[in-house]
Image 1 (cartoon, helix red, strand yellow):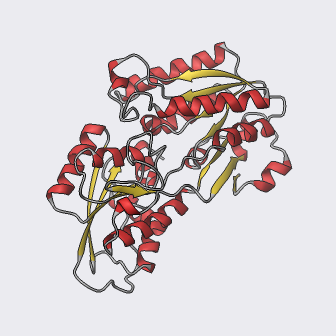
Image 2 (spheres, rainbow, N blue to C red):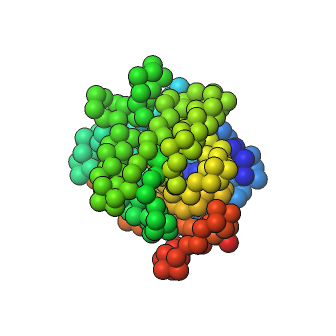
Image 3 (spheres, rainbow, N blue to C red):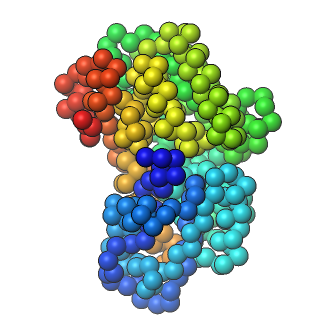
Length: 355
């Protein structure tokens, strides 16, 4: 799968049109805007997304059918500036609600409107990002779901240790907020002290102490740059991993590294690093393991928020909900290539095993 196809799959079907027509919501046709990271999908990609769209299946069950009682405006962008421009255009065409798949795009939308409701299917720490005042009382025009869970960092490291019982040194691939001007402009830093990756890094360090695992920071600064430059920085991080003799790699969920997903898994395999990734897509392109929120479930739940907003609910009154389902995915083909034998007890607990 190439970079374009990955961006299309990232939204988990959010980009797609709904399936067959169903019951209609009574009343006038409403307008929903969808703002997504990436480039517009081609018809084939759109059709594939449609076939597995948990969001649109849920919308259909709630009575919303595109072309009948809901009109959808889709906008895309590969940078904060492009996403803001797309969001501004959604404001111009007067949509009734803006749907986003991740916090990065929600931030772009919030940057151009404080009145049109914004529903996020997923986000990092929405409070630290400045998207909402609190999870229980959002207090503005943004609501939806967050993937933040206090135990996620520890769980990922524990699963990696279970797969490799003798594991002692792990490299952590993450996007830091370094001193460069690029990073200071990053949407990850909405106000002083609110850098999300640093928070996850601190939580992972605590987990490492408990598990008696040494961490090596493979921090990549400012990957909101050209693809070629980002590749250089990733190669440098992998070179550091080799120099430090790390045995495995733990990757944080970092928006600016998403377009380099294929590059990252390829580098990890070539450097014989067993990788633990933030969500299942990485395993489908060759990553060893992933543990994270069930994105299909998040999108399904996001549909209920859109439904409530379209029926008159205020985002300020709809508490932001955390993840309810997580999934563990293991790629046995990659394990074999790395010379690893995954314990049967771990395989039995996996939600998906790729062979």
